[in-house]
Length: 332
Image (cartoon, rainbow, N blue to C red; front, side):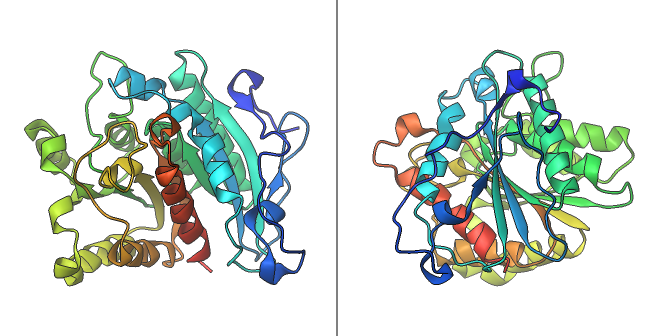
C-alpha cells in the first residue's frame, strides 16, 4: 500500500460514483463509468502509462482554516458532494485517458498543518506516478499543502507560476498566530524566499471590498500580478488575455487554483465567504480558463471553498463540476 497516515485519510466508498448508464461504448460513457477508485490503505497507486494523459482526483476534506478565518464552516463535505455532481458528466476526453480517485486527505481535529503535510505528500506521489492531480477542497488552506507537494516534485530550477481565480489575495501574514484559509499564498512566498526561488503569483477576480489596503501593499511588495474583478470582462479582453499569456510564458509550470468565491453569489451561493458581486461563469471566463488549461504547462489544479451546507439547489456543485469538466477536457 502507499505510505499514507490513516489518521488523515479516507478512501472513496463504493457507490459514491454513480449516474446514468447508456451503455459501455466510449462514445456514450460518463465519468462514473471511467473513473477507478484506489484505496491507499490497501493498494498502490498504479503507474500511469507513459505518453498517456492521466488525472488523479484527490479530496481535501478540511475547513479548519476557514473556521480559523471566521468563515462559514462546511467545506469539508465538499469533496463528497463534488463527486456526486460529477458522476453523470459525459466523457469528452480521450478514450485512453486514465482517471483515478485516490480518496480524501481529512482533517477531523485542529491539526490542519499535519493535514496539509499529508496532502503535500500525496500530491507529490501522484505526480511521481505520472498523474496530473485535481484536488477538491475543502477550504483554500488546500493551496499551501498542494503547492508544497508540487514544489517537492519539480526541479529547483523550475518556476511554478500560480494562477488563482479568487476574490481575495489570501496574502495575510499569520505572524505569531495560526495559519488559515487566507494565508496560503503568503506562506508560499515566504517558503520561496527561504529557498531562493521566484514567487510567481497571478490573482484573477480580486475585489477591492474584500481586501484591505495592507493586502494590496503586500501584493505589490511580493511582485504579485492581479486582475481586478471589474476589469475581467470582454471589454478588456485583449489586455486580460495578454496578461495571462505572458504569465504562462514566463513559467515552467502552472499551478491552477479556483476559489469558488470568485463568482457572484447568484452563480455560487454555496461557498465559505459569499460575495454579492464577482465574476460570472460566462463564455469569456471559460475562454480564459481554456487559455490556461490548453497551454500544456498546467502541472496540477484545485477547486476550493465549495460548501454544500449553503447549496440546497446544488447550483454551486454543478458549477464546480462544470469547471472540472473543462479543466480536464480542454487539455486534450
